[in-house]
Length: 109
Image (cartoon, rainbow, N blue to C red; front, side, top):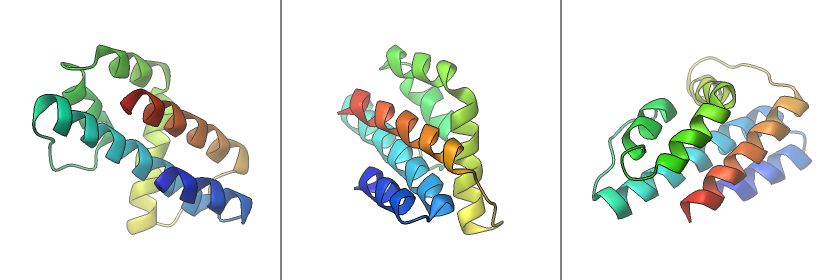
């Protein structure tokens, strides 16, 4: 659902909102994996913390984090920016964020 929203936002020119939705897609996919495989998930919005938690049950997701660490940092900024400090992102950056979020979702389902 959030990935679809990110793609729709990007097509409509809502680039900043697309970045936020890419973060939400990644965050919820990780929480899903933790809930199913570990029986819990931490009440956090930090992608880094979620990846650290999921590392024990899914090392492949940690490897994904290491490959795309900068993208996940930008996603966290997009989450904070959407809620507290508006920030602008380039279309190219957000296109990359969506691709990374798609990879997260693909590995988590």
